[in-house]
Image: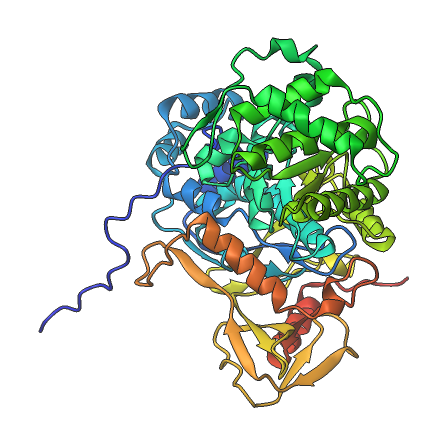
Length: 558
């Protein structure tokens, strides 16, 4: 009788280690190793356990979260192995009574028998819904708790923060992550750049993140560059070749000067002309000579309307004579709404007066401690800003320090487990579950529903009762027009399941954007959003409350 061959699952796939080399099996809490030792000593370490990773409340006062950090979790367990040096350290810090057999056990463990089921990275997710389901030997999976929480918590928080900034800024605006210098250390800076990009930002100033992850880079000059110049005499090489290569302007500085005089006499400045700061003009001219194809100037070092913008326009017009097109300006201080409108008027006036198509549409970028609230205020005031450079409030998640991810045991040896609490929000939803997203006729997501693993899946067009996990009166019938099962296999362990391939970063970002577009606007709004419904099936609801009653001790009054 022929033996049945096992199902193949991405044979030969080599997954690289975590991006940060500090992510090792020791990046955990001490009590994970004390529990592992106790499990081993009592003979429970090989029992099959199921844990859910989820969070209890959406961040920033909102009603959605963007899930991120999955790739780093998969990289971590694919390369999980304790070194001899690490085992020696554990031995020295665990207990004087630690047996050598446990150390031998640690030498042999890896995650080859661990299964991970997760929502795809970049998915929009909600409180109580498992982002990951982790199955495997109890002691091994216990050791994954802290690193998994660490890898998902900040990643999802930053991605969500970025998505919220994108929502308030609008689809048409360019969002630039400028937070490296304000981030909590190198790892915070690298991670924030990556996960801001997933959440909808277009580019970063972080060169290391650009190289690591392929994120587009942006950056021009600072106030130090502008103020470092004293006069136009400091520019030694004044020649600039035309864009088409046909000839060379031998004195670009003089060409800029000619245009500045024309602007000062023009109707466009409408009497606002004054002697511009010539050291600023020298800096902008020098920068244009270095980057004629990518000339974007910081214009608020001295005076925006009396010096910075006229100087920029003179350089931009000189570049135009040679076939180049300036990018635009950046504002880093002042009344951003008012200044952007005045600058746009000036650009449009120069376009009309000098017959230069497109000059009025040059980009205006704003920075200066921007956040959700200030962008919302700018929208209400009216502005002409095309791009935002956002740093501190984005990368530090200033409005909320942490997401509050937890990792809870829901089943052991095929027996469902529940954690009870006087705070209902901390009661866990037991057993291995399947999760579905139900969509309505308008294409928006209506509800996420959890069912027991062995329950039949919901069907399109068939009415299903969706119940709040803990509140008896909160329930509704849903007739889904589309159904999406959310959990996918990313690590198959010793099972015969096929594993999902980790997608490139740009695909994760695109998924995030598409998922956000499938959410109803009232779930997305910044203030007082409508809560999104997370539910359980009627059968799972009954089982939760049966287990709750059976596990809760009965008090006695005397």
